[in-house]
Image (cartoon, rainbow, N blue to C red; front, side):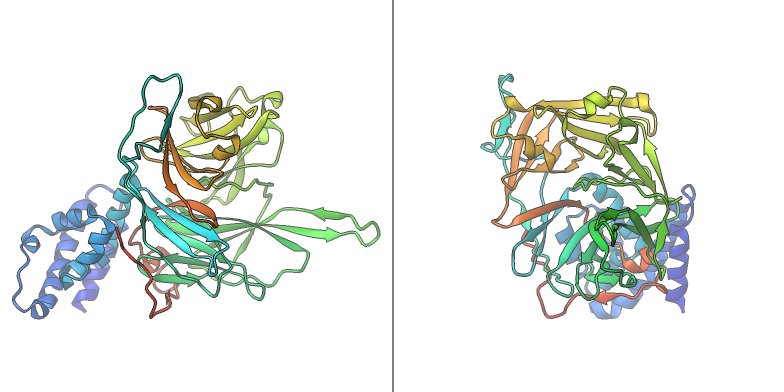
Length: 456
């Protein structure tokens, strides 16, 4: 009963507004750790750990700064540290720090027998001396030592090999299993080895074509995780045999037991970028009108709206785009495009929703760079915290470009299979805390298999 009271008090403090709650959180964590320390005293058999003599909030802060492999090892030290790491507050501060200090990628290979998913962790401050390529107009290049990516080999095939990666948010990843009998979505945290399946949608008619366009995100105001998917119902006129299509969208809130239909969806283009900022998803539409080019979907209001493009986007100018995409750079909306197959430009909306706030961040004159083709920059992954653009080249190499130093870096050469890469942050967010313990039916990954190989 005493532990339950401690747990309730701790959960209460996390939900409080910022201000005086830091002192209350420290008291609750200290109380929780004291209870855990008392329960662990018998099992430790007199062993002493000097770090446990520090204030609890300092211990939590130290643990949150450790690499992932070391945190996992610390869970085996004693019950006190294990309890601190399992606490939702630790997951919260660890995630906040990981979002700004680490760069992790999820790689999905197509063509292998089981459609494996792989996690890679790399240091964005390092690059290979032989892998850099700079502008010919620059007298010298900036070279650094390459640290090879470390493979964690996360093999968690959920009901077969027909897995599609939908998105990543706060350490949770969304998968779609395209099973012919019963397709379903699944949310999982590979670090905690837990997952949950979303409610099954009633079997749609054969006229429905799955566009394989879905998104997974978190609403910071309502503290809810949501999944949205876009479908294209196709109907055939029995007299003229003419096919007609329209766009429909469904949304699901984690913890609920149903999907809801969204009104007035727009036709979207598929994109590999992470388009989530300011509590909304952002996409490039299929419209050729500049005023209808950027569409957003607010996760709180669940409504679509159009955002203004840069002022120089005229109809004549937009027609000369070879490719266009939208992403996030330093928590601002960023528009990237290739103009006339020669110039790559990145524009940032400094003030959200204000047309006049669009500012040109950088440009790449592709004819001045070695081994660079137009199609290479059409597969961006994300902007790193240092401003570098990370993308997957046409030769399936992981490459980054530094706008400040005007250099390219080949970070990793991929395998023989077709590869998709998505940005991801490893975290200890539990699905029970994200969805609600009473509303979440958790499952564990298949036991008896080696889920992770931490060869860092």
